[in-house]
Length: 388
Image (cartoon, rainbow, N blue to C red; front, side, top):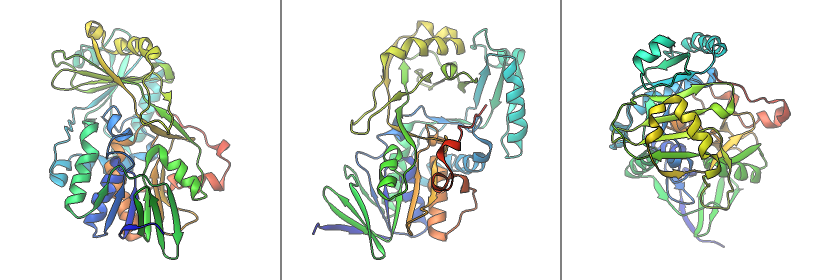
C-alpha cells in the first residue's frame, strides 16, 4: 500500500490562479487544504497568458462572476501582501468596420444592466484620446475600469498567502489517479497518496483528463496562445488595446508596461500537447500577428521582437468553463477549462468555489457552467456564442 503523505478537508488539484486563489479563500473559511501542482504554481496558462484584466466583450451572463473577480483584483495587495502589478488603466477595443458599431452599441446597452461601464467612442474621439491608433479604426469601445497585471506574479502570490494561512502546497506533484473509498478521496501521486473528503479539480487543460477518469468527460481542446514582447520604447500606450471584430484572424491585442516593452498576442492559437512540458510558439504566424498589431499602432513597426512564448490552455467545446459540483460523485468539484480568458476571472472563481464548497451555495450565478450540460444535452447543440 502506498504511503499516505497527508490528509485535509479538501485536496485541490492544480496550482494555477484558480487553484491557488481557491486554496487561499478556503483557508479563510477555515477548511484545511492540500494543493497538488504537477509543475510549479502558476507555470502553465496562469503564468503565460497576456495578462488581461478585461470584462468588456465577455458573455453577458458571465459579467457577475467577472465583476466579483474585478473587486478582488483591487484587493490583492492587501489580501496577499504581494504586488502583482495590477494597473486599472482601462481597456479599449477598436473597430475596423462600420457594421460592427451597432453590435458594440447593443452589447454596451445590455452590459450596463450588469454594471459594466462601457463607452462607445466615435472616430474623432478615439483619435483624440488614443493618437497612436492606426487610420483604419472607425470607432472604439472604452471600459475605464479594466486593466492588466503581471501573470507571472498572481498565482504564486495567492499560493504564498494560502501557505501562510496553513495550506500545504506541493509542487512537482502530479495527481495520477483519483479514487473515492468510503467517505474519502484517495489521490495518488508519484511520491505517495493524499486523502480528503473533498476534491477540487482546477488543473486547466489537464482537468479534462481527470474529469473523464471520473466518468464525466467534457469536450476540451488543448491549445496554446501565441505571445510576444518587443524591446522597450517610450511609454505611450497606457490602456490595454484590442479589436472588436467577427473575423478571427483580426483578433489581436497589446499592452505596454511602464518599463516600455510591448506585449502582444492574438490572431491564431496553435495546438498543444499535454505530454510536452510547454506549448510551442509557431514562428510561421508571426507576420500575420505583426500585420494586425501594426493596424492597432503603426508606430510600433520599428521595434525589435525580443521574445515569444506560449502556454497550455484548455478550451471547452461551447466556450464556457466547467464550474460547480460533480453530477455523479459527492464531494467532487470542478473549476477548469476557462478557454483562454481565465486570468481576469481567476480570483473570483477561487472565491466562488470556496463559498460553494464551504456553504453549499454561492451568491454568484454559475449554473450554466455545470458539467451536466454535456450529459443532459448533446454537445453538438452547444454553440460557441459570440462576444462583441
